[in-house]
Image (cartoon, rainbow, N blue to C red; front, side, top):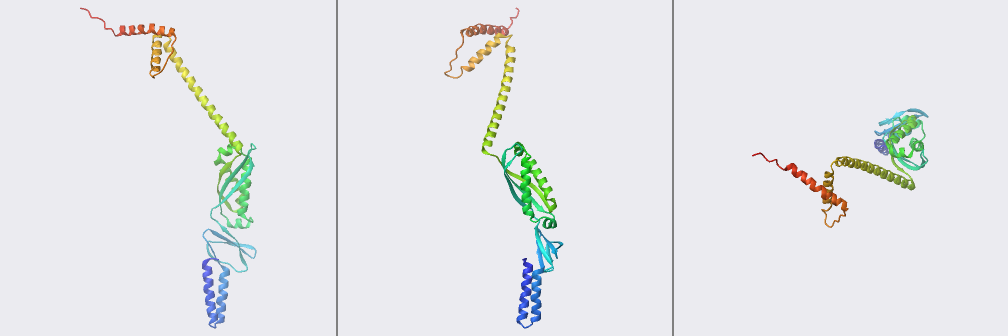
Length: 286
């Protein structure tokens, strides 16, 4: 009962009662009959509502929003349709994917009624029907998808579900705004296996990167060896520099073969003598 109808009904009933009490029974009776007429015939639909009216069992029209009048007894309101966006949560438990993996999937659908007449006349209970259609479509989508695809391509699965549910509910005057998969749960044993697989993939990638680095370092060592092959003095100086760098830390003990020490002792004076000859100025004439 809307407040406007209730208010007018009460006003007419009070006036009729007062007229009846004052002795004017004819006018009082008329006002009471008017109150009953207003109560039975004056309806009001909110901005988001549509009233489907049947007259003697046949479709008379769709009313709303606002005030409207029906004929009592002959007309009847068969359905009040809410055209606002609705949400329906649905799920599929232990559904098998294409690669026979059982999963539990939770999803939610956003929809609204765009044709109140078809929603009232073409389906018995459109709210229950859309829930059943959503569950069936979800199971069909899971059965046609691989587990990896279902986990990685969530947006594509949402779009597929939306288009499939919209196709099945189009004759009911229902529009599907969007479908969102909220969660995909897989068995714990499979989660452990996937975790180990991911760890193995990461270790494999790390080893590949390490091998690439080792190959690059080996190439640099080859280039350095080619630089030293014709210059043994530079090689001995580099060896002495490495020994010096290694002995910077206190308490470091280095064991060198005696042959290496002898080679360093012969190479260094030669190198120093060569450097001295390069920097000694040439004497000028008298």
